[in-house]
Length: 139
Image (cartoon, rainbow, N blue to C red; front, side, top):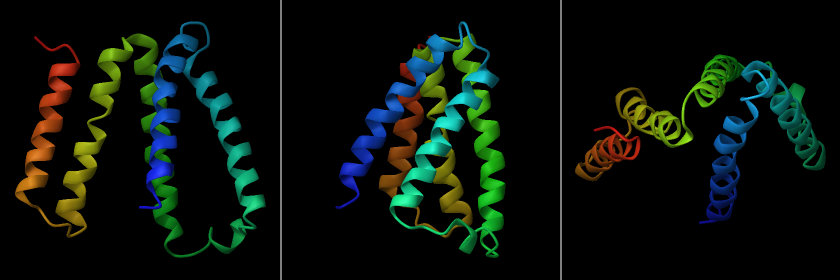
């Protein structure tokens, strides 16, 4: 389980994003906020690539890179929309609804990536939907 420390760091770090974004987008437009955050993200990523001696050019022209480019479009649209939602709505409602991407990704994995559908997964997906419904304050 060498991934566990990374998941915990990601959980804590990403958990800080929504409250900070919600706060800053009250004064700074979401597009500007996302642009500056992306610059910081790129600088950090380039630093990691330099430290790990990863050659960017050896990957960007591979046939599989097309998936990266399409994923980048979805990521850009998704994150920009998320920033706008955090500007306009409460974190306690926006974040759980946004979190439904987990359910969507799971369903896509089952439907298109030949991942097994089990009773446990169906229960988890159903529970996630119920959790979002309850935690977003739906009445």
